[in-house]
Image (cartoon, rainbow, N blue to C red; front, side):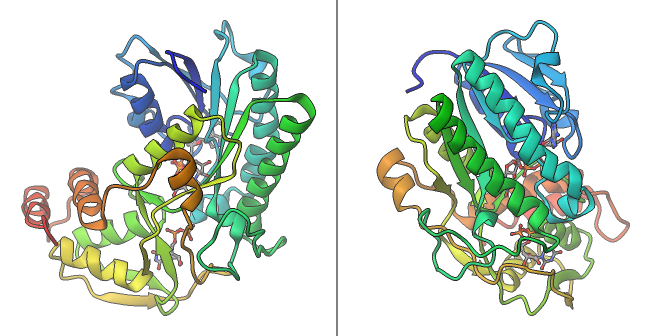
Length: 338
Ligand code: NAD
Ligand code: UDP
């Protein structure tokens, strides 16, 4: 059980989710070493943290031995978020994604075992593949195509879970596994290709919203602050897991596109594009375990989460002649209560 101030190593800490984790840990009084190769992340995400005395950034690829770091203070905990996570990212980086889940996870587990540190793996709802059970609880084993294009991510995470549990059983390593469902919020890359940043940037520039397939597939999206609270509640606990961390409010991709279009007062059309190979048809977490064992559940509804997300995207989406930045700000400010 984590109680006092710790030295926490956050692998993948310059990414979308990792940068919010680093920020929260620092705010809670911990020292943070952020390790990132900047493969899909950016130093901009942690620029504000570089000024803080408890924060250190190390540029390093976790698929190389972590012992290569100079003068690394002993970690009390290691949170492993280092992996491409957006489908377009992992589809263009298949081998690096497999290596981050396999070699990266083993390097991190070795370091945790050597220092007696608590290790937390950010696994994913993708371990359930295109699920045959709905909603998905942790006891469901999943339905993953092991040789399809998405397998580089899904199987890397499934292997990472297996490796984490094997270290726990064989070496007694203190581990936890979080299965994170779709998370959104500020600092997602505008071009990262996931549905929310794509729809938001399209809506803000009045470009067509590209809904894949018939848009009837579902996702359950969780605002980043809630996901971070869930991850840190699991980290602070003695639980091994796996534990689902996600928002159980399910909606279709088409409905989400329409919500974003309305919230931005956009004139964008909705256009249907070919669906992705092996795209899961339904996805919704059963969070009974997180609720009962961690006392955690999401607190931010979609209206509020989108409002905060739009505030951020309005500042970073490149200006087009049709919608200037001040105009977009005015429009998204009007989105309160949508
Ligand atoms: P992201 O791409 O923004 O962040 C991943 C970070 O890991 C980036 O900063 C990247 O540079 C870094 N990285 C990748 N490979 C690395 C390597 N070999 N060595 C060092 N750093 C490396 O993605 P994200 O959405 O922030 O996801 C973070 C983690 O959470 C991932 O492990 C992902 O699988 C998991 N996750 C995220 C979601 C989500 O909806 N955001 C859902 C499920 C699981
Ligand atoms: N999607 C879409 N248009 C886009 C990007 C994604 O319709 O421009 C769909 C995608 O095919 C999937 C859903 O949105 O059905 C969620 O995709 P995302 O990449 O956000 O995450 P996933 O849950 O697939 O990892």
